[in-house]
Amino acid sequence: MPRAQVKFKPAREQLGGPFRLSTEYPDDEFRMLSAHPTEDGLLVVLEATMADPTIILDLFENAPETRISSYEVLHTDEHTVLLQFQLPFIPPPYRALFASGNIPQFPYTIEDGWIVCDLTTSQERLSQFKAELEETGFRFEVVRVTQSVDPTDLLTNRQRQFMSEAIECGYYDSPRECSLTDLADDLGISKSTVSVVLHRAEETIVKEFFAKSVE
Image (cartoon, rainbow, N blue to C red):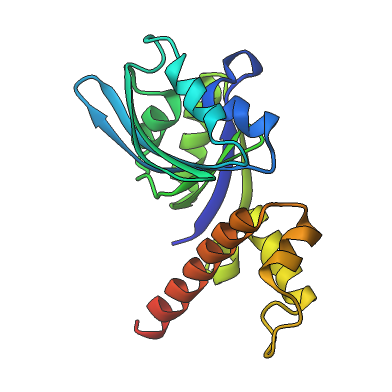
């Protein structure tokens, strides 16, 4: 069955919360780790890696109850915040996934106002998902469709960019030609952010490689 990477975003007037932050802070990283329907709406776990994490904390602290009924900070450090929050409704993308017979595959990334995610699906279900979303005012694009999965296809654009830069600079050479600090300087990003992005990319590639090797 084909695997598709798709992205979708709400209409401009609906662009709020983490969607808006991802456009205002494009160098920061936002990942939706899980989302589960409840009697009261949708329970979401969101991870944000930001130069200034207080920005997203302030966003949730000041969010109206019509948008966020409750939230809890599960973890925070110098650059990362892990939040669990309750939406008092089921948002259109989640309704569209189930209406089209697709199953959510987390994590999702939020980049420049777009949710980017992978789906193992059929052409029929993918077309139905697109139709369901566009009826609610969302924009929808298919990034790529692959029949067999290459581990690098599972990376976000940002992860691919960072890894390409790391390889070019000799970060993965033995001995290393550049340090993590050098790499962060070249990318113009904090050392901790580079470390987090590279670690997640490496985790994805290694897990996919060994999953395929034991099939």
